[in-house]
Image (cartoon, rainbow, N blue to C red):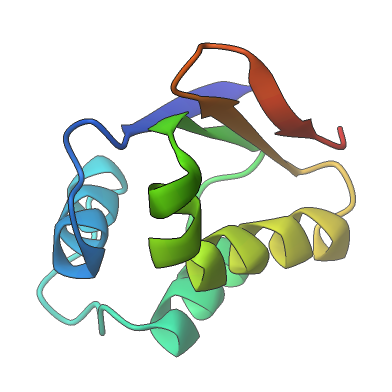
Length: 99
């Protein structure tokens, strides 16, 4: 299973997340950079199986990126094992894993 990490020490806002996501998954300019487009890509277009890990999230980042976190949690359930989603807090401790 491929692993793709998103380091929130380097991602400060939603546009930066979408740019990083598009880069890591080699999406073209047509990627919509919104929650609907992200859902479509995650559930249909990216190569599965994949593990996606968000690292260095603090409480403020969790609030700021809450909708994206929820999207990945829902995609993990929807894709039944083809997608694993994990969060590592700033402390390095795992904060989330259902897989």
